Amino acid sequence: MSDNKCLTIVAQKPITSAEVSTLLSPYITVKTIRQRVDNPAVYSVLCAEETQLTPELRAVLYAQQLDFALQDENPSEKKLFLSDMDSTVVTTETIDEIAEVFGVSQQVSDITAAAMRGELDYEASLAARLSLLKGLPKDKLLPLVHQTKITPKAPELLEEINRRQMLSCLISGGFTLFTDWVGDALGFQYKVANVLSFDSNDCLDGHWVGELVTADVKLATLKRLAQENQLDLSQTVAIGDGANDMEMVKAAGLGVAFYGKPALREIAQAEIHSGTIDNLIYFL
Picture 1 (cartoon, helix red, strand yellow):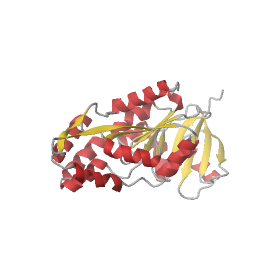
Picture 2 (tube, one colour):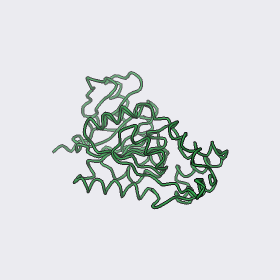
Picture 3 (tube, rainbow, N blue to C red):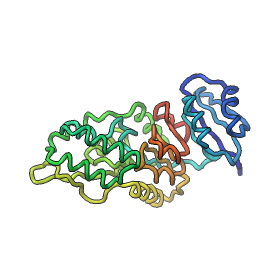
Picture 4 (cartoon, rainbow, N blue to C red):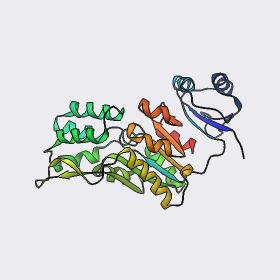
């Protein structure tokens, strides 16, 4: 069994093997470098077992626009994929889109941004945002669902996930109105999200129904789906962008930050920070 690690990098601009070696050698012990035949922008860099994604190494990878994943040389085959929705497989925070319709966009987006950075308790932040949306009619929400913009290359990523017959779950601190449509459009098998509460006039009443999808719930869902399908956590992938994704990203066999907030980037073993979301395919 190999004790080596492999740093996979996906370049956004031309770079040679020699340049990769020169760039990385001050930070890791480079053993071999292999360029993919099917995509010359992708390199697999075999390195020592003790290799870590230090802040200095990450800074170089950011500066050179190199998306990356650090894994064992021969990682477990991945069988389960969990993805956040907002700012991951869709381009926006859907609650901010709702707020724009209701004329409270700035107030809600400020709370959203603080929550995603981990500066506010998630439950309290959601309660504050929903209170600002109280009274919005359901018929004003439904058109927004179909206007939700899918992240470029997310359909290609899910096509490959499904081609590999991996289980997939869209899990979101957003709302089922959106995850049901996005999940079906992209081909997710499971969908987990918050349920909005409406009053007798079919208007938002400022609350949600049932369990709130927190970071702990995302982690529990990862573990539950793995257990139900007789999978080890090493066989799982989780991707997200914010503080609410940290626990599942830390626990997954491959945890990916997609244009992540600083707190998430610090703990992710893979990052897509310069390219498109389908670069994840090269890490599988």
